[in-house]
Image (cartoon, rainbow, N blue to C red):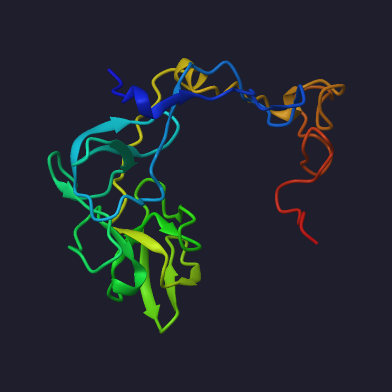
Length: 233
């Protein structure tokens, strides 16, 4: 059974990989109906304690969500981090607060070496860094105005000290094995056919007698080279 808080859910229109009626992303379509969960990436309910009610599944992401119930009665979803448990108290603050997993505060109050997730790029813009399953960033430098964080990809980003971040590492949801092709069809992933198995009218690599390997550099259905071809000038 998939739990959901109905007031925080709504339906999104599905385009099945089409733009203006034409397929722009192949192998998409016929997915199961699903609701979109509104997630609080701003964390702008400051100094109001919240309690974790439960953990919910999200069909749109590879993460789990934590449903927070604030002391004023409002409910909000946030991304689940490690060391979260039901009935744990969570708070978002613009002051120095308890540096516990799931709490949100400004970068200027955090120590160098702190593990972070859901980090803003600009102050009050909403979190965009480290939001995927099992990821985290590290605060590696601070000065009077800016901080430098190291992402999971080892890239380094320079951002303002007034940006908010959540403490801890994103909870890693275990990816389940697919037991039949239909499970990918439920997700909206349609079959992928090799170009060399098609007819010449369908793909540049198609046709030929027997199992030929294409006879030209590997390419897309539209003739653009792939497999090592540099597309950026």
